[in-house]
Amino acid sequence: MASQQPYYSASPPVVQGVLVNNNAAAVSGAPNSTAHIYDHRHVNHGVGAMEISDTPPNQSPLNPNNGEGSWKKGEVQPRRCNDFLFAVLFYAHLGVMAFVAAAFAPRMYSDLAESAMNGGQRDLLEEEEESDYEDGHDGGMGGKNKFLTWMVQGTHRVLTTVAFPSNHHRDLEEDGGDENNYGTNDISDMMLLLGISALIALVISTAALSFMIRHAQMLIKFALLFNIAATAVFAIGSLFLSPFAALIGLFLFGLTVYYAYVVWGRIPFAACNLVSATTAVKSNLGLAFYAYSSLFIMIGWSAWWMVAFVSTVYVTSECDGQGNCEKETNGALVFALLLSYYWTCQVMKNVIHVTVAGTVGTWWFVPSEGSSCCSHAVRDSFLRSVTTSFGSICLGSLLVAIVEALQAVVRNQRASGDGGGIVLCLAECLLSCLKDILEYFNMWAFVFVGLYGYTFLEAGKNVINLFKTRGWTTIITDTLAQGVLSMVSAAVGLITGLVALGIAHGQGMVFGDSLGASAASFFIGFIIGAVLTSTLMTLVSSAVNTVIVCYAEAPREFELNHPKLSEDTRAAWRQAWPTEFNY
Image 1 (cartoon, rainbow, N blue to C red):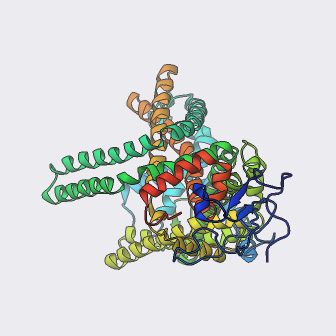
Image 2 (cartoon, rainbow, N blue to C red):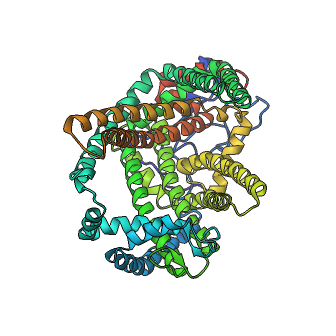
């Protein structure tokens, strides 16, 4: 049963005050067709759109006799906490992680601090030089834990250089080193470079949205041609390696050329989707605040999780400051900790995805509420994603996180070289395929979650049924727009890296020797630029998926509220998919 209160409530009772016709002939202006009034305060269609006609409200009025059947059109669901048990489980697991970090981290810090004051870092390095681990080491399950040793070394460096600087200076003097070789202003220079790089990246990536709207087709063509050029260079280079490598290189080159040939005619289709999605994001640029906030939260969570992970393994395995452990590392405990990390990362990513879906849905159906930087659509969509729809997000994210944690365990076993190489390789391939399937399902299911507030399973079932009924199972596999987003992220990263390199040289910033200074400054700028731009492009990617779903559900509303975009989109879709697109 639909809710009496829709997600969006604004004062105008009729979207644009326009009467819309019932059948496909009405699009071309045919007379005597049944009229509809779309009232965004109603709860049964779109994100609050009402249809008044003889057509049942749960069926599509488009092409009723096209032989494809009908489907249950999306309805805004009652305000309730869907899949709430998974939300409770998620919060409970965060509480456990907080307790673990608070209980174990102080003990590990105390041991390592004592070891650092006694020159334990020097002893640890010398011990490692003398022996490439004892025979008792068995891939991290007792004896000297290789990963834990590496983590202990890192913690030692932090403690000796920050918490105990006098010991660090003493070690440098004993080694005959000169602290000035490391740059006395490294920290301040790096923070300045990070700030400048971030500011430049934000400006360029925001300007890139407008550039993408104006030159979408050109960017898609350039991305395809760049891939061809890159594989051509690889193929030429492989000729000098071995006949087998040359064969692989030529095969990849031919495959890339063939792919470009096949999809070239669909470039206008992908460009229109990209333009519509980018326009929606640019009209609601406040989404970027939530995206960048999630990025910083992700960084903080990673640091918190790392402390909890290392300290838990350190204490439960009864390790000392040199990474020697009395007990075997508990595999189930490691899996649980990995699951915690991946689950939280997936939840944060999908919260943004659902927020974008709800915002783009409002822009689609009720543009008056979703066409400003700090619109109600952005705020309300985010609030729903972290309240009523949060359980659904946690459920879908948990499925992917389980597979990711299993992948990490399998990769670790393969790296340890304990045997079972073929079986582990097959297991990793199967897990990778399963992960791709689950992520693909989540990508579309969460669009319906953001648009209508369905539970996770209901949303997945409805969106798959929608595409099957439409005959769009091929259309939704088109990924041309995604290639452009990756290319733009890399391009902004390159620009930011070059600017950072110029600033570092101009200001005399020191990060080691001259070559190291150049590489470090460029690397810092590139990473900052690419990560921030990729974060913004993720919004566009989610918007592209939402545009496809909304166009399958409600093309009439798109024509009413965004006529120019609708006209271009209809022409492009008919050209690229003449069979699948039949209205």
